Length: 162
Image 1 (cartoon, one colour):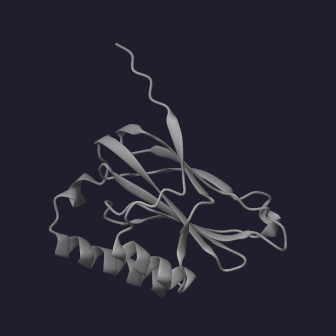
Image 2 (image 1 turned 60 degrees about the vertical axis):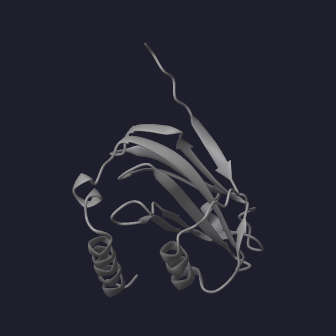
Image 3 (image 1 turned 90 degrees about the vertical axis):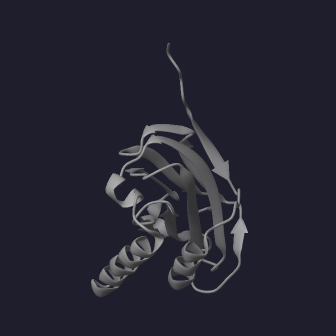
């Protein structure tokens, strides 16, 4: 039996974003209202394995001096390290689109957020089903152990000048 699974896009869907992700966004983007829209996530609906999942972050913006995307961030709140991506762009980037591959520990809601040159903040979410997760050892940690590891990774990132 052959089953075809294709990607789909999500635009401006704002399912509940975990508070710790909102906290990271406040640290990175500053205070401001997180608006639904303008941000697109292209992901498969189902990933047979979370080891290498294709993802595209795209933001509707002109990419001119007057209006452009300055930063795009991606999050997988169910991963041991929730920050998937952190891209800095400008008007010379040409277009506000980045494609890569990510690891996903489990079925979860992926979050993407963008900051535009006018300091407006935009976000979307995408539910993806992961059949076999990556990051297996961390899946069975207690919540406090995951929090401690997450904080240690953030501290290490700050120490290298992020």
